Length: 416
Image 1 (cartoon, rainbow, N blue to C red):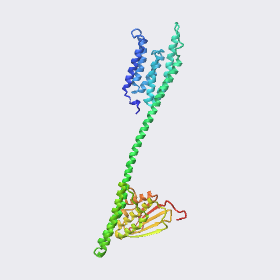
Image 2 (spheres, rainbow, N blue to C red; image 1 turned 90 degrees about the vertical axis):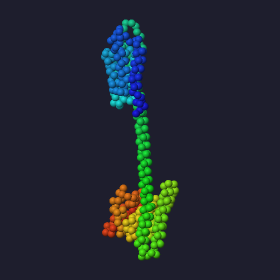
Image 3 (cartoon, one colour; image 1 turned 180 degrees about the vertical axis):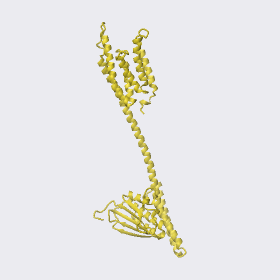
Image 4 (spheres, helix red, strand yellow; image 1 turned 45 degrees about the vertical axis):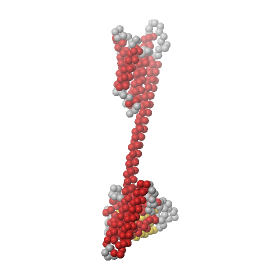
């Protein structure tokens, strides 16, 4: 809503009353008294009454206001109402105010109609003025009429002033609408920033949950597998129990270190080393120590992964091997293949003798189905690659995870 339209509409009634009062005071001595010439006086005061009514209702009913200021000049030109003399023509200032007000705050259709109808108003006012001039010229007494404006000049002047008032109101209207639009856009942008901040919080929560899952799920799976193994061999080979307990303690201690580092990173923004390709051997050893056989096959030379991509590869392999422990226990087997001979790293983890990770097929890659497979697929995507996970065709309960991470820098001499 613009500043002009926020003015109380009661202001129009006050303005109309003030306009009528001032005009009555100014013209009381010039208009014939009602008792002497009631017809002529009534024809003159009805003109004033029409403009007073138009001012009063300009914002309640702009169509009525424009109808009044168009009808009054027509009635004057036809002789129903008295034409105004040169001293009374300033009453048309009311028309200019109405033109401004309607163009400023009235409906667009009425505003355009008001400008079009000003042509009729100017024509009728010019006709009335010309009739008055001719009546004065026909009087026998010498009257200096060279200073009296002619009908066409009055019409042109009226039309020019009316158009100027209308244009001023319309310009202010456009400026007000643009200001309101800017305020609305600013409000929308503020809302979007709020939504973006909320989405960022949700993304951060998801990232934290994924990181906690990756850190703890692997270590706890190793601890569980080692504990189960120690319990099974305790009676037959008690001498190996101490070694198993040490491995369990080491795995739990590593989990605590990883969790503490994660908490420090989240709270104090303390940088901590992120695992990469150099930590894969230790990862494979932990899985083997937990009782699952891991065979690693590498082709080509390591080259071209960024630290973020190395972290993604580590987490993907960690999650895939953790699933082997969770679903295959100490009897699970996994073959890890790392092939660097193409345009990136092609990694596969083929597990055997275990259920499908998360107890499902590759459909678990869809959003909202847990952090395991979904997390691996998301990490591969963010690293610029892709990941699939599906049961193997062999009837051995196997599962195959395949990922591809493009290298950031490659030697042009390397061929697939």
